[in-house]
Amino acid sequence: MQTKPLDAFAASLTFLLCVVWGFNQVVVKLALADVGPIAQTGIRSAIGLVCVVAYALVAKRRIFRIDGTEAAGALAGALFTAEFIALYESLRWTTASRATVFIYAAPFFVALGAVFLLKNERLRRVQWAGLVLAFVGVALAMIGRTPGGGLLGDALALLAAALWGATTLVIKATPLRRADPIKVLLYQIAVAALVAPFAAVAFGEPSPTHASATTLAALLWQGIAVVGVSYSLWFWVLKHYSAPQLSAFTFVSPLVGVFAGWRVFEDAITPAFAVAIALVVAGLTLVTRPRRAGAQN
Image (cartoon, rainbow, N blue to C red; front, top):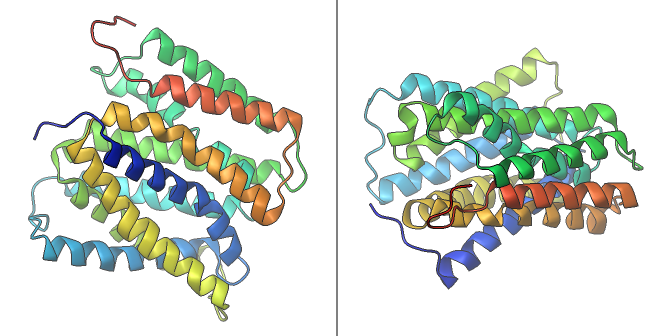
């Protein structure tokens, strides 16, 4: 199916999705008082799994056949699960604003991995410049301390970014690249829903015994709005519109996340951290910049 150039509808929808994802770290942090990071990973994935399976059945998507993508799907699911456990755990030790900046360093890891694994996706000079800017921004954010930020939390959020990048590379470099995007999503959330309870027991995470109204709302938001609705809409947009043009909206999520952390938790934004944010956003913009017709770099 040939993709279309970005129109006003797709641009508005993508912008809205990026806003939803930018708020996610704040929503997770609100629920951490009652539900641990591993349990949240499993609960959101289980709720999302029900939503996505229901959609697939209603839409008659032929995604339940054995087609040779099972091993790659299991690997992508394991990486996806580890990514969210690391990200959610990071929010115990650092601010939502800092975690958001670090998790959106994922394109940096994708671009580096593409050099070795994706021979047809070589970086242009402008993308290398973007990687350098993003790297400097991440380094500056790691060095510069802000109230509420901790090195362990920052490192876990950066690990989550690396795992996100690894998941993307698995999808691009294996038979998953030819699979229905909804099936790829199902692999990831199904593995997370199955593995998270065992991981919680293995790591000694206490079982949730109390959930406030805020926590319940946060879990339902993550499962239905984020996993069930926004991820499905994102894959629909990717199928119908130009992926390079859509990727230009990547910078929106970290900005929204930093703003949300500041408004909800009063996360401090020092001058050095503000510069780091600007460098990461500028780097993301260059890395995801679409190639112009006839351009060589």
